[in-house]
Image 1: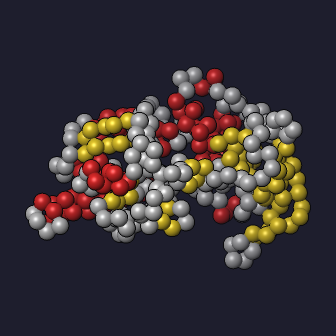
Image 2: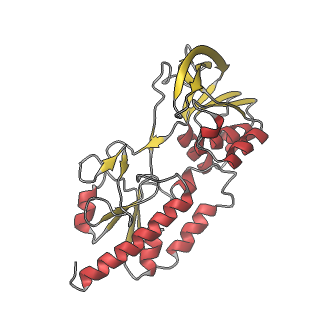
Image 3: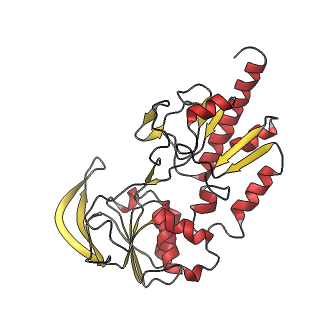
Length: 299
């Protein structure tokens, strides 16, 4: 991590986190069966054991503090805020009871002391094709759901999840339906199914509507069509953005002097923990050079 690297280089580091536990997605966002034996917290303890890192929990960027305030208070700033906002389906019935946010459900599951206390649908439909979609689908199946269907608007090969993850879903009893998009969540008072329209792939990777529809029964519908920066995190215009993500250079530096960023929140990320860790390492080395040049009178 960036904090780990900077502390090893001899800099005093303050780590701000909105959550009660450190670890980010490794603690809250990855299916419980993937990171067992409190893996994320053991990693956190190892990193903090080197010393020189002060932790302040319960601090939310954009709510309790702004990037500009942080830059004024600290010599340098690294943003690793991830993508906490959830993309919406934009269809009728999305607000019905039984329509859930996949990321929040996985977080609740990870923090539950008794996983048997969490509600599990009998017929679960997951809309999306990435790692989160696979995670919540497989987790639902392992918790006892009778039928779990993943529906993705593009082809099977275009799904964001890896081949390993897709095979894991299929061998876990999850059905995957490519080339279909949701038209409506069926009610009336609670989710009872999803109306889909079949799509057709184009040669350029696009999709088009076919007019052919079908319905899948569902008492729980999970939204897993991607994430975005939470509203209000970076809305002051101080940092250059592109398609809702932070623009950085090869050193992970943002357009705002003294501020670096990495992980899912930056342009060009691939939603992998190992990539976020690499971003932190690259940024930490760049920040170290920046701070040393200032101390020597060159910055």
